[in-house]
Length: 240
Length: 242
Image 1 (tube, rainbow over the protein chains, first blue to last red):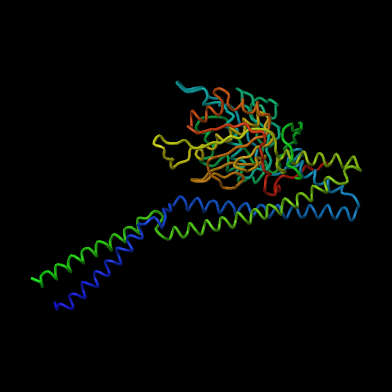
Image 2: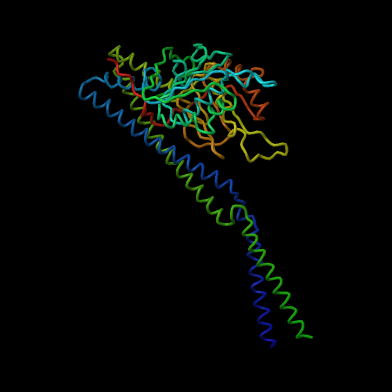
């Protein structure tokens, strides 16, 4: 190899090497930060949550504007807002649970297993627990249940469930088995929530032998809540 | 000799060059999350999140203003007419009870976190998400102890509130969120606290059987937001009275 050609080759290889070493060092330097996949997914989740909440607030704004319009209109046309307030009150009562409601849905019957205990089996396995009822109610809600009741007691946001042996206490009323759970919603999804292969209710029936019977209906009637609606500790925020 | 040195020099140089090139490729591949592209993505997402949060705040302000104006209607005229006054009192009370208005009052704040592994790391699977039914039991206990308003990670708990989890997110009122789970409740502070901290009670069970870190704190003022979706029944209708 001619000396000049050789020198040029060496120089150009050195140049390339030098360049690569610098890039290598820069990549390793802390400048680029240590971004893990988890950080990215967390950020994506937060973004999705914010978007969802913004959509919800926009709906609420629309609803509030309508209600404001109703008030203003009533004042102008009738000179009194009594009717508007009454309508609003009926709407809130329905959401709270103080109205008898009916619609398509599902009726569920739940009670302790009727079979004998097998040797070495825990008696707890064949009776109905609070958590069983809570999970089934939650599953129904996931499936879109709008309104629910147990043994005729309307389920409110403040309702408690206490299972004690063969009885259940809801809203401070106590009932004996069987526990009849009613829910209004889309009968197909409600039914799936109870009868799907990996549904909790189905598992209770097939694995633990509890009595779990259910049927959908086009006309499920759920009575209103008949107790007090009084609060001693919670108050409205100022001005709202 | 010079001739030989030249050849060897070039050979060695090429070897080092090859080594450096392969190291460069490997380091780009190995950087977690895919290398430099991720950093850009993270920045982009962070900026988007900031913008969305700002937009949400503005919208919330607009909504609060609308609600104040509505409240003015509810306050006016009430002095003149007893009937309307009573209607309005009921309206406000029911709205507060059922979660349509934000609430404040004395109560407790419960923070539930996943267990910490013995070596101090976080585990991949969230114990809370896998066993979200324990949160259901906790809410039930609060209701049984007279809780008047409850929120979970700032989502108001109403009659139709459901909790479910996918592989890495927990959904409350269909809003995604993650542990730690912060549950607030307004009620008689002593009763609530006693019921939770009962021997062999719900908090004991959470710590003992699930290894969760549970912190129960008394608060003079607990601030619970309103339920922030429009409630509409598509299937349930009032029964026609004949």
